[in-house]
Image (tube, rainbow, N blue to C red):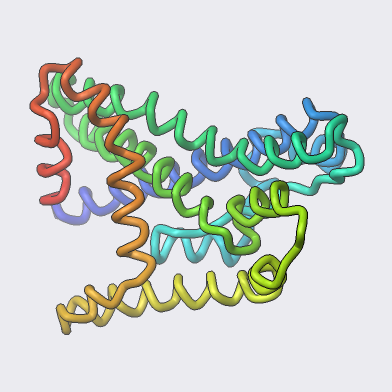
Length: 243
């Protein structure tokens, strides 16, 4: 019975974390586009914190199954930007910047709950899971979206700075979506098969990329906050791996 309660708490926290991370990410795109002169997202009802306006079914399923996914791209009309390339670049980068700021601000809240909140049945466990997953998903979504594959933000950033539209750009534009789906499916299958054949865990291409990137991107956050709470640097991170 205890296992079932813990599992429900974990699933609820995971769902809420996904909703918050995806919604804030897309809202940031819409808001920055509007501030740069393009009202397209606002007029189409996307400059909102209503999560139902932002979900992409396939992206949400991928996020749920594998921990990687995407939301419905915010519509923009670059012709409306006051400064074309600046507006395009800022709008493309807004989502990943929002997620990184969220990770930076949520990690100390997680440390507060983990270290100082009294043990209240169910509530403490739920808040601990929720705040950690908000941090982890924010960081993961930030890193994942930097991949230069359509429809991710990394491709849109490349689109903003690449004036030549060379063969690499055209290849990523045409096949990026399929490469992305392949990497997600491959990661999902490696996780499933890896529980029976451990060697398959080493074949998880997207998993290796994300783990490496998250350690680099997460290092400044952990280095900034853990010593401030009197926690030996890296101790929390090592203990999380045993959850």
